[in-house]
Image 1 (spheres, rainbow, N blue to C red):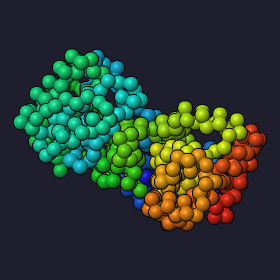
Image 2 (cartoon, rainbow, N blue to C red):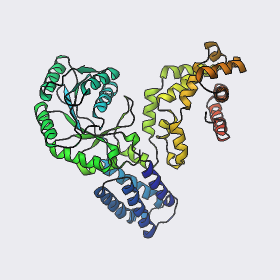
Image 3 (spheres, helix red, strand yellow):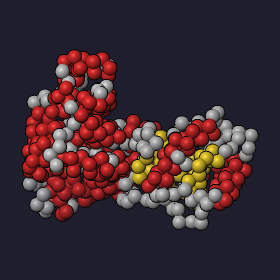
Image 4 (cartoon, rainbow, N blue to C red):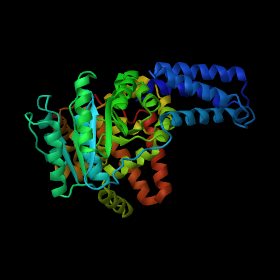
Length: 459
């Protein structure tokens, strides 16, 4: 998300960042480029006009012209305005109501509403420790009810059954009664979508809203529709008392116009964004962190959270103790490290959160995003026997040929994996012998190897 906007903005601002003095002329030129970048990202025109005007007023004021580092101050101004247009701070769900707190999900057909119900249920169960019940009031779309039941099983939350012959209001009232009996904290209601906004759809969801009086009414919208996403959300906001918006499919949206437009156009906060198709691919929308990512400052908080969620602390502790005692780092250890990297989205998932990634050429990013290297490496190690994983020295030519055949790769790929293993093993050995300094030397050696082609891509 934001790839094209990031490239345009960072290129423009980087040219000014190191300058000791800025003039009104080059500031005006930079502001014009910011305007073009926002329009190309499909940001709604009223949003672009308001942002650019505020940036221009602040940039040509004393704040920049008299600063010792005017280029950096201008970067901060752009960042501040990006944050402001997206809502300044993350807005939490209002669950401080008598249980069950009802969350009504609205949106057009195809926006990813039912999938988002499953993701939100998992988020509330895992991160907020809530007891969650989900119910489908979509009596029109074939298999909508079965889809939600399957998602509920997948994420481990309770599902309230319904049938296409029932009325949506009756379904939800029965689900609320069940939620009260079973002491559920949150009831999430999936409603029917339509292919376009129409009177019948609005009348039905208004009646449903009036009948259940939800704590939250969230509008789910496909971010890839750009400005249309903001306009559709605005139409819903005029018909329903929305409390927030969920942007889906942001991993496929290279422009990001919807994220920058929705809050300004609707007056409603974006509360969540869908970042992947996985059940845990839903993030709280934080304007500060999103602005940092747009300006290629990374999202270190998200990176830390990803590590906390996906790294097995017990395995990490055991490996640290093993290395500290000077024991050999083996291929079982390497597979654990690779699996944990894979759980964090692989190299592509990590790259998106690191500062400075916007400076990497697009073709290299594409290579990383399309790479199947980590799963392939895991498969190669999985084709080894337990004895071979514990004792990599056993891997002679015939064994490597057998492993290559078993994992569906070429013998050269097994050799490349073993080269990477040897580099990791050397680094771990230095850590064991030399503490933190040893580790740093080992890491420098690995980075040097990468620069010299020591980590070549597999076939």
